[in-house]
Image (cartoon, rainbow, N blue to C red; front, side):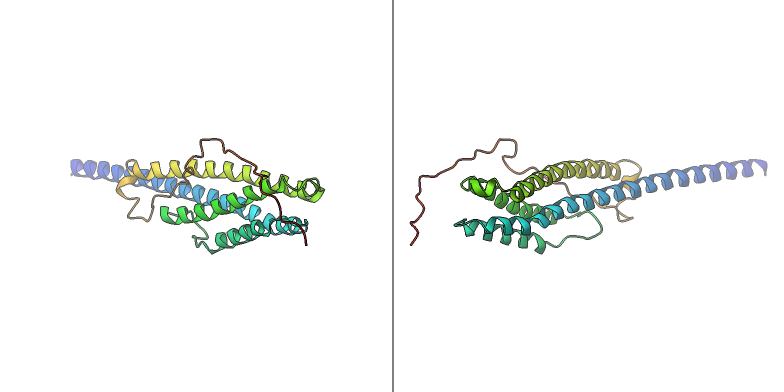
Length: 208
């Protein structure tokens, strides 16, 4: 009888230890998942900060005489396209295609804003105004924040994705709804410095 009780006691201790171990592993995944979602919210926050600057930037630039209206139209349309991308509101995307769509729309806005700053070089009076200088500084600050927060997002996503693939999580993570998070990927050619060329050879049409 004593032997049976000892065996049962050992088995019970093993079961409790295993339960505690699995509970700790589960709670660790929850914490990592929450960290990814929190960082995703921060990524969205910095992108939204940039989007909020666009109306003021367009309003300031549009007041310049003879400014290229097509550039402003492109920026407005790119900003609108960003707003049309549907992503989970409270959690980081697990579908890489969703993140690619989001990144593509944001990239179009980035490209449009970059072209705007190039075009502004032709308008020294506009470039010299305090309001434009402030907006340009805020825009540059937003771009820096975006780069930093994207990098941090990839770091916490890597930590989480690695955790769900390690033992023991690999045996239960998928069944409990822990799915792999998508990563931001570098834009093709991002490792090379962009070449900006100014072409002033085309003469502006004469005013009537």
